[in-house]
Image (cartoon, rainbow, N blue to C red):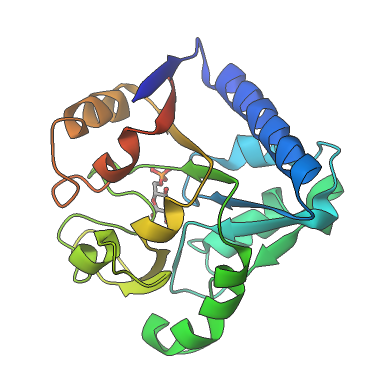
Length: 223
Ligand SMILES: O=C1O[C@H](COP(=O)(O)O)[C@@H](O)[C@H](O)[C@H]1O
């Protein structure tokens, strides 16, 4: 992995937002549309705030979450709501947010309606991943019911996922779909996550799902 250390979180978020904007601009210079997949959770909000004010041809950009918790947008655990509030706003409100949630009781029932639009937006130009302290990324959790399929080359683009460490059912892009990205960034903060990502380098993806992405990723870290 290419580990990039920043002096503080504010600088990390500003600089990574700048890198991502540059990569989207390059992609748009070569193609009609560009696509980017981003994490939810508690870490990426400040990058979204910066990116949403950047001037680029957002009307030609597709934005896809890495994963979603199977909760409605009214829930404070909704990654979709986070994106709508902090990324798909301002200049970036012209971007297309490709949905990863639909109002069915289970993620399994939503897969068929959500998958075609995600497939149409692949391959990804830019991938930003987060990581939990349990080494999950997207909703590829250690011990998850469909982890083996989610990491395999035979995986579909989207899977439903249930895991002991996840409070609600999830939907996630498979590793195969996420790995279509030209550029991969892993965004982590804090000493604990630094130790965890260093440990993950020596583990297999079924023990540490983030390990499936480390070889070709820039890992961005600040204390
Ligand atoms: O549940 C999730 O967790 C991970 C990590 O989130 P964080 O709060 O530790 O930053 C996130 O990457 C993923 O998209 C999300 O659904």
